[in-house]
Image 1 (cartoon, rainbow, N blue to C red):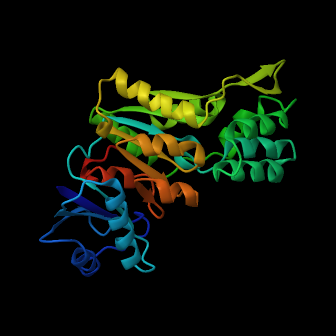
Image 2 (image 1 turned 180 degrees about the vertical axis):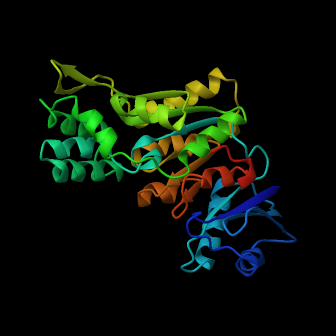
Amino acid sequence: MSLVATLICNPADPALDSTVIDGFRAILPGDNEMHWLSDGVAADILFASDTNSIADQRALADRLRAARGDMPIDVVVQPVIDRRKKLFLADMDSTMIGQECIDELADFAGLKAHVAAITERAMRGEIEFEPALRERVALLKDLSVGVVDEVLAERITLTPGGRALVQTMRAHGAYTCLVSGGFTLFTAKVAELVGFQEHRANELHVEDGKLTGTVAEPILGKAAKLATLVELREAASLDNLDTLAVGDGANDLAMIQAAGLGIAFHAKPTVAAAAHGRIDFGDLSALLYAQGYQRSEFVD
């Protein structure tokens, strides 16, 4: 079977050169060949393997990571075939954006530290997502809905590489969906800024210009993210190999594991350990390199 190991750096901190790459090549089996995707930033090493097991591919990626020492290089190992995906699902908070929106809302209620602690436990999988969300939303009762616009304008930052990722995949025929356990009040704007064709999230109830402290049921959590992947895949008559999913928290893990390529992005440890691929150093352009795109093909 033909596999590819993609070595990826953050564009702001390139660490690849021929010597480094030769070190990785020595670990891989048989005669292999290297191709640059972006000088100093990303490269493919193509090689043959007698296994098609995801577990074996993950184990080989772990060996390569162990060999990199303290160099900030991400490694994704996967089959060469069907690398360029036709359906892309992405989490929003701490993935497509750098913040957790509910924590920023809570700051306006003087409860950021308390709410952020609950968020962290939910994202680590230590508590169930749905009751944790209800608990946090209840703490926002009577907060002006106008605060959402203030948070969007002053506190929310797009993750570098995200717009290029979505725009490049769309230019090559992929369908893109932002699917979040957060809120439609935020996903609508983020989806527009980044260029997603669709967004799905939870709906906060609003009355007389204030949050009521409740959220529409059923809550969009882990099961709903997975169901969205299956629904959109089947609607487009795609094979599972054609799908890509990315996220950072426990509520993303089901869709990450079900996708043809599931990426844990700067993720919680349990999520990173269970995903097919992980990006710990790179920005979101890493997902384009993982699909074999060269830097010259990016749509910025």
